[in-house]
Length: 137
Image (cartoon, rainbow, N blue to C red; front, side, top):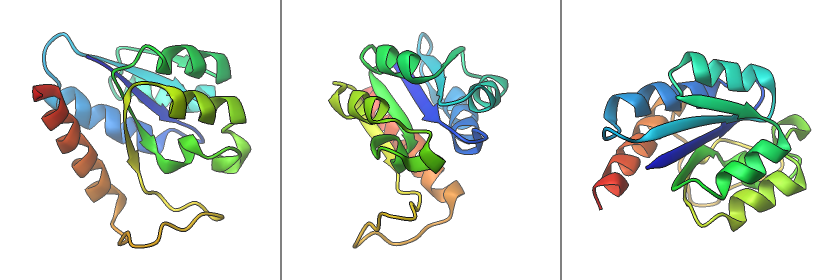
């Protein structure tokens, strides 16, 4: 299974996802870090990603190959993450046939009605648990 973790800014969410994923993924699975910037990519690689790449083209190419994509909600919203998510990145993630597990992290210009606010750590645990379920299907 090829799992792509996408993050931007400092890579804090992505690095937490990567470190927890590495503990539960089945042998032979690979985690790739896809950062919108080099700081995010480096943080995810330090957390244990098998390999990583940075930027719009890397994200566009690799999400088409991934089986599962994890990241904050902003990865499907153009101009999210302080403008780091381009239209092409968001479109590539949405168009990818991969299963998407998105954390409903607050975006200043988007409100998700009906979703209760939870601490980030809890959201990450839920996402990792869901990926564990998916990998057994």
